[in-house]
Length: 185
Image 1 (tube, rainbow, N blue to C red):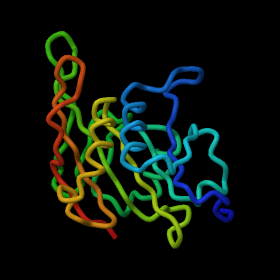
Image 2: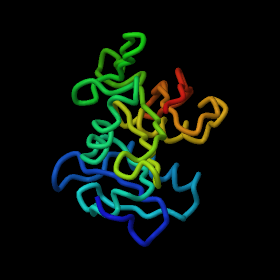
Image 3: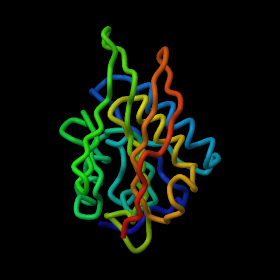
């Protein structure tokens, strides 16, 4: 890996689910929420456009994009929470618990889950950090971004992983809470 880029602002990275598609609504809501929490001192870039030098910067990864997948793979031995195949559920390696979104009879989401992770950036562990806010669905991603600002619910850890749960009512997520938060090395 090369040296970090010259711009010291954190890089907020989003992704497109399919080439040529638009950004998922939950990912957009997460970006807006994090920009409100962090102020305008961030840079916004699509995952496929991140350079090798930027990989060594402070990163904020939104949703299930290609860079999020690479970072989670590199953090695999550090984390006890993770996504099952294709993000269909969140699993807990410690307890064996699997949190899967729930839907009503019409197929509309009623409960969604997300992860909030803050860790040393695996591409530059001595100099940078990475934050991941991602969900099983868009509601889980947006809820994870909201939970990032809840220091007390996240246990006050510098580096942590947290499972977030949110109820979905009439197409909006509500009653978001941190179900589990743990410090990580």
